[in-house]
Amino acid sequence: MDIYILYPVSGIKKHYRKLFAELLGTMLLVATVVGSGIMAQNLSDDVGVQLTMNMLATVFVLFLLISMLGPISGAHFNPAVSLVFLISKGISFGMFVFYVLAQLIGGFLGSVIANAMFDIPTEISSRVRIDAGAPLSEILATAGLILTILLLIKHNQNLVAAGVATWIGAAYTFTSSTSFANPAVTFGRVFSESFAGIEPVSAAVFVGLQIVGALVGFGIYKILEGKNG
Image 1 (cartoon, one colour):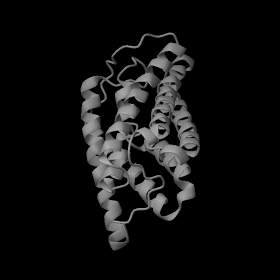
Image 2 (cartoon, helix red, strand yellow; image 1 turned 90 degrees about the horizontal axis):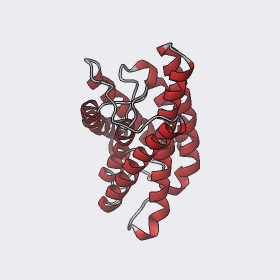
Image 3 (cartoon, one colour; image 1 turned 180 degrees about the vertical axis):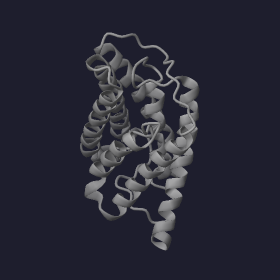
Image 4 (tube, one colour; image 1 turned 120 degrees about the vertical axis):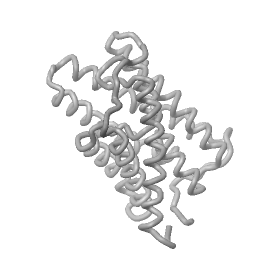
């Protein structure tokens, strides 16, 4: 297995910058997702307008965060992405655990910050997201994200930031779940009773689906790459 990994990591202490970058990046991503959702609700009652504002803010910040923090940590910001890098031996198990912890903490802090900016309490969301289309939507969204990352790292590394932002932006509008595709972001969104919120049971189901999607995406990558993967 010969996947090209941008920034291999091993050990914990010497890589504190990577962990901080993962925490910071996930925090800013969730703050953007939740904050833009609250702003959209404040400005319009039209759900289409709200979704478009939420999507555009997420696309813009994803491109910037990956471009800025990619050289430091690899810009995972997503436990599903880190899981695939663990499986492909891009990171050690120890670093995987610390990456996921940093991402989850960042997700929670991002939601707290967004709530505070709009002077609303941090509380558990009651927004139910489970519907008949959610399983296929989250599996497809996450598989496509993983496939985008791996293929662009392998064949066109300079387009990773644009490719990830483009995929998520598209999946916002063509999946019924609006493409969460990220366990840390899903976790963070539990803590806001807003347009971007998700209640805990829905979040738990989504996380399971995202893990399945990540494995599906990795499997498709291996099929496409064959012996070269």
